[in-house]
Image (cartoon, rainbow, N blue to C red; front, side, top):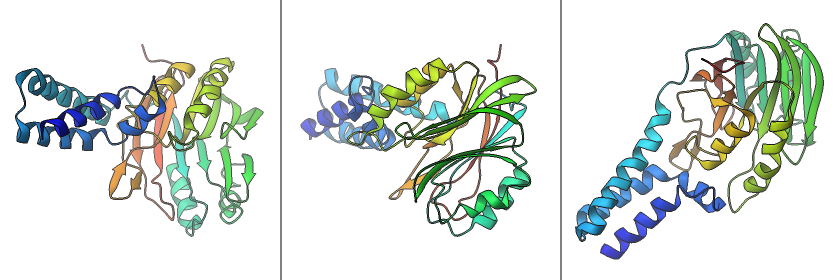
Length: 283
């Protein structure tokens, strides 16, 4: 039992090691579950003090690192972003369109815009006449929709990135839609290696909505935030189910953060996020 407790502690510590290897972020997805298992094993095994008390401390710190992200971030900002992974077989584009229109968002960021669900763009064309769709395959497209004045577009398939340079009441911003792959052993680390310098080179503040396939307390999301000078809008909401486990993998980032709320599934396997963001850092 003591050996199992030690192994659980090692896995928990490794969940903080995403900067060293992608496996760390994969473990971070399950950090709360690992905390629960580790606590149970420590209490059952009652190992020597040199293992028990540091282990309990690590469990408390790990739980805190997750729960901290459940707290609200900055107050609501003046720009609104509706973020949604549509799901390529979405059968409720009418319901999703109605929810987006009701939100009256300034910017809409979409992933998995497929040939089958692309009708959503037509339903929104009057309210959102500026539409940039970056089509990667028949089932995978990424889009940015807006009613704001827009300039140069971005469409980069390997990065899973689409974007527009917009003129807002707070000055120019880049509105970006992102779809990261799953973490290690999939290609998320390689995407991040190219995405981070790409964000850093942009010539205006960035508002970024996407399906990140990663939780808020990961190294991956911290890296995105640093590269773009961004804050994730909060609080974290569960937007996807990995088997029976609800996880928060859809996010909106902005320079000054903001306040976010979850929206219904509406034909998708992801919930939407409606975020009220600040295009500039809060003082």
